[in-house]
Length: 314
Length: 288
Image (tube, rainbow over the protein chains, first blue to last red):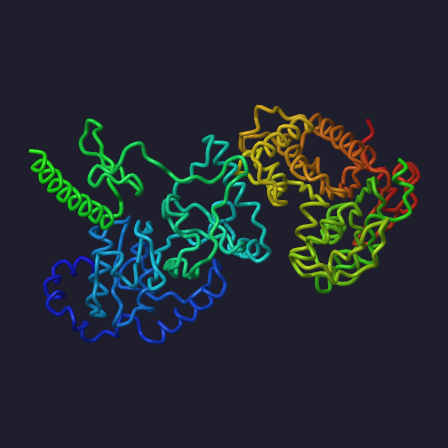
């Protein structure tokens, strides 16, 4: 299906406004969507709690974002504007496939600009641009259970969540400090939501963890393989776990983005050749282009300014 | 030894019975355990020792009967905090400021019971694999109860773990090794350290020296005896090894087919057994 889409992409673009015939709006049938929405309501009512749901088979394998797609399919309406990112980029296979999937099955408008989107489905990043109350961020989650690393039994982890026995989570952080001398978990860094449930933020870099705290946007999480939904409602406290003497910190880089020169965004390391040459570029392609455009505009006005002032002096 | 003269038992069991369908696990067990006392439970395999121990520690629900535990009076603040957070304030029992609150382990909520079991109580399994997290380091194993209590200072956890490794005669250099790389005797000592780190008042031990060779057993018994004396621990010790019982326990209960057939001071029971089964048990020890 995914592969076929490349071949039929031109067809899809022609029929952009008319959804694919023979399928329900957004692929899932209405009763499935209602079921997911009921789960989402419960998830929003209990921030950070993992709600089991009867996940449907999607026309793509688990691990491609089936959880996120089911959530998006359940909440999307004809007036929504969809943006899909994969590791921050709008142009990678996963993002392009999912975007064209929804374009074909719903006919809704899609965008790559964060500020224009009403629903943003994401894999492993939160956009650099601050979100608003009018936006919903949908995460694709591979492993929804943060305690799984230490406790293989589902029955036991449910019990630990119910009884708020979270000493175990700090055991994991202790092990990290013991092995690496610092907290080395760089992604899927566990958080405590609204002072209650410990939650896996999906494999976003820990750089993005502070953005979850008191975010004006609704954050929904869907795990397709594990069949779990959870949510962080707008303006909810999200605290990253740590030790008193090893407080939570975010990653930082010694150099700015090689393309746009940003010093505040999350950078990906790109290896350029076999000799070890590498560059650091923004992972959020939309934010990078926006910064670049701003910079060029500023450069032009600055250039005009300097030439005119030079003219004055002469 | 003045703790033994305390007028209020730490743990009381009344009419404790467990039936598995028609089959009897153990029946009508009554016992009182005073602070600082070591009570041995001996008997052959299948006599109901472990069933009794699991009921006494709140891990197994009895068919009928009660297990009453008297909480630490110095942890009243803790009590108030817990009842506030879990809203299970209607615990059964009377409140006596000197003696602490008496609670029935089996009417407590699951959360309260588990919390008690990892703070004021301890449980040493026969197989250390059941009581340890084999995949995380020894230091984290010792620190887990402290972290569950809310300790969030890595430096302090580390210092405490080192202290406890020393107390149970393990090399401090092994703090970062996983218990899987330890020998059986070392694992057992680590399990004891992990349980004692929160300074419990009562520790349940299920055959703590089972599966260890004789010299390691002797060292472990010395260690347990010293820790029990130094910390004023009350211990309920289940064993089939009469030598272990004689060395560690003050009082002895002999179980046979789910019933307590004889009880008394350890030396009394072992030197002058009354019940036919106890006589058999004592005479079956290999004479050196």
